[in-house]
Amino acid sequence: MPKAEAGTPKAIANRIKAKGLQKLRWYCQMCEKQCRDENGFKCHCASPSHQRQMALFAQSPGKFLDSFSQEFETEFVRLLSRRYGTKKVFANQVYQEIVANRTHLHMNATKWTSLTGFVQYLGRKGVCHVDETPRGWFIEWIDNSPAALARREAILKKDRQATNDEEREKKLISEQVKLANLTKAPETEPITIRHPPANRKYHPVHYIGRIKGVAIM
Image (cartoon, rainbow, N blue to C red):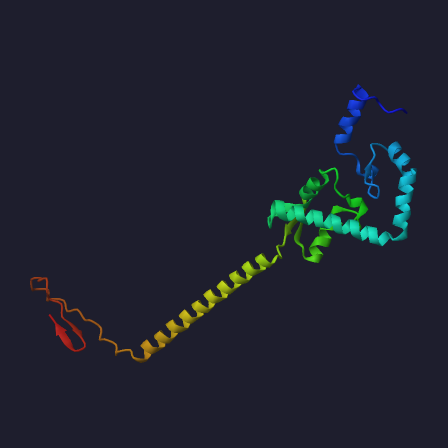
């Protein structure tokens, strides 16, 4: 079929379609070529350029697979750390931002067959805290940079210092209590109250108390 002439409705429609995201299964990672439909993908797979690329892949498939996997992981973690930091976020939300870029490296070219497998891998590797919920997988990036490690160490040191100060204060209070018990004065005699006789008029001061043997009128 001849190519549509520039400026025609067919050419404009093709240009609009090419700007949008296409189906992942019609993308060739080795050639970095996106096809619009199944027929176009079949034609591409039969092309000499694709055959040459597949011949290179067949020579060392593990090398290409590891390279693609490393590139995808690096791009994913870079976006996660820069956009969300150490906040907890929906894993699929980060993935959708990755695939929104037409030039991104597709997951079907990596060693992971699903986003779930990739998220679990990040959790096992210690890159993220992962949490499975009814809504799906949530991830939280772990900042292991030297600056972050130094901040965490400073916080731990401050907490240990506060704990030590608190323990010293408790010990000091305990020693003061013991010392006070050893030097405690004899207990004072209880204060007694004498009520006036019934046939006597009440006067404001008729209470006699005795504290340490001293009578108080």
